[in-house]
Image (cartoon, rainbow, N blue to C red; front, top):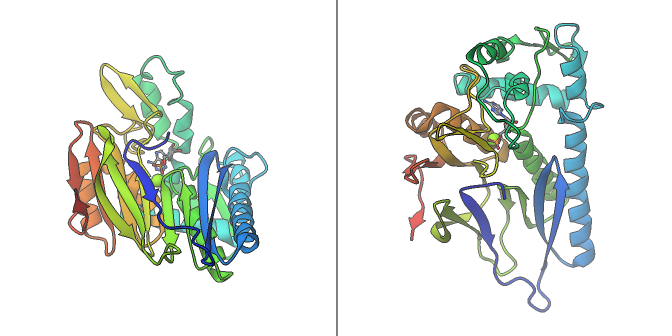
Length: 327
Ligand code: AMP
Ligand code: MG
């Protein structure tokens, strides 16, 4: 299970006779579970849409994955400090938007965090804190300003040896947006792309009602504390219950502060509502790093964006624009 702040969809009234069909499929892509739902006139059309969504997400994974040695992202990383790498316009634009998000979040979000993956392991294999000198050294290879783009030549250059980029904090949101866009363009009237909690919806359920999202506090998962309709937008939760390390009773999340080299503390989950899943994904990760006060302050300045934070004491903090019906 990925999210502490548990998001799930309540789906009602699907397959009435003669009505539209609602089809689901669960697949493993980008190292995560994707739950796909489409509303279609019949099974054949619905399955074709699901195949289309899966094809699109797999295509994006091949382009942006830093785990796949054949991806363009891996080529950029392998050439850090050596040479610029020519990439597809799509990847170039994703990197451009990632850099804009770094600027928007004062560097809390930074795809070049990835070189620090070597010193922090969140799979249970880490037994002690890394030495402060090691952490300090790791930060030297991080910094979005050292990602050099040449838009004319369409190249990306990581200017320092050992630098690495990774899209762990934005890629699933981007893929969810692209899959939704493709299905809508091909006439799918409604659906949900749920990338392990990075959720994007469009249209309505077959019975005409809105898709509903229920939010539970991780400290009391059995009872939803809020339910709300999700119309066109996206909702994303950062906060991985199983991916953290604990030393001296301090819990370190798998999200790293690029400025200090240490993982974020104090928050166990952040949910962001935004017009796109990509933006929500990147901002949810950033709020972790910025902390609750700065995070909420920053979210409040963005139009059509809202967030809910659960801190490590179980307390719920909401941004100004949040309109939820608490139960
Ligand atoms: P998310 O679940 O969207 O919050 O993404 C978390 C993942 O993003 C981590 O597992 C890392 O792969 C990556 N990541 C960690 N820290 C940062 C950061 N400060 N900026 C961008 N990506 C990060
Ligand atoms: Mg994210």
